[in-house]
Length: 284
Image (cartoon, rainbow, N blue to C red; front, side, top):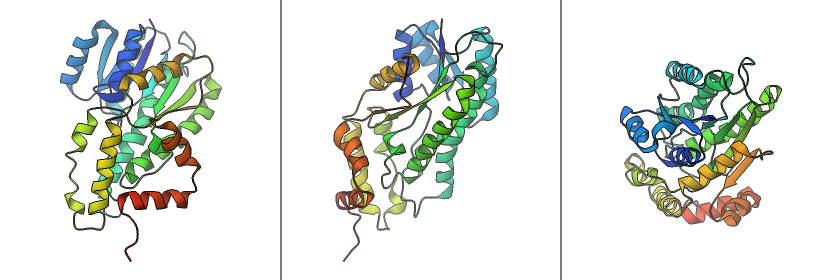
């Protein structure tokens, strides 16, 4: 049986990927941070799922998990590694605490390197293992190409992940390991139920109070009409198994306007549109 490691499978895209790959007969080693999530998912997916309890920023626990996977796959390469775990911390960059910004980069970017380094020997860098080299799927975002106000820290992490992925892909050609980016737009996940509880009160006495509220309303509306986690999971399956995968896949609702047009517009024009939409224009 082929095996894939997926980080952050408790909910959302990670859970959708687990569900899809499980239905394809793939064994999933999925990371969670809480034992109760490990138990819940084991009950849901049975013998096709092995939980790995770690935080992607904890290098020691990640390497221990990689050792566990190595023993369980008995000398075979993994089919793939899906770097999905991530967080989104909102706020205007002018006022956002440095600790929040640092945490965003640590989880969404440094954590991806920690996990990748730990599992590379199981993807083809160890010549003693059997099987074709595996593939690395890095979950970026439409926010890895198009920056939005009040998501500056998140955008920085995902823009960074895009560069990280391109460099890694070119380096790992020497081992035959491919690196593929999946860049989703809005996806319907439980994270948006929590987003309504985000506390923007630290910024209520700044010029960003009203614009940030408008942006959050916009983001919630978009998210709840987005793709399902299983839609993204199916695309990940394609990226793992198709003979000649693209280097990047965009799965963005309202693809023409929110992806193609948004990237083709001159940056100053897009600035003007966003300023008008969220009330970010200069006061007269």
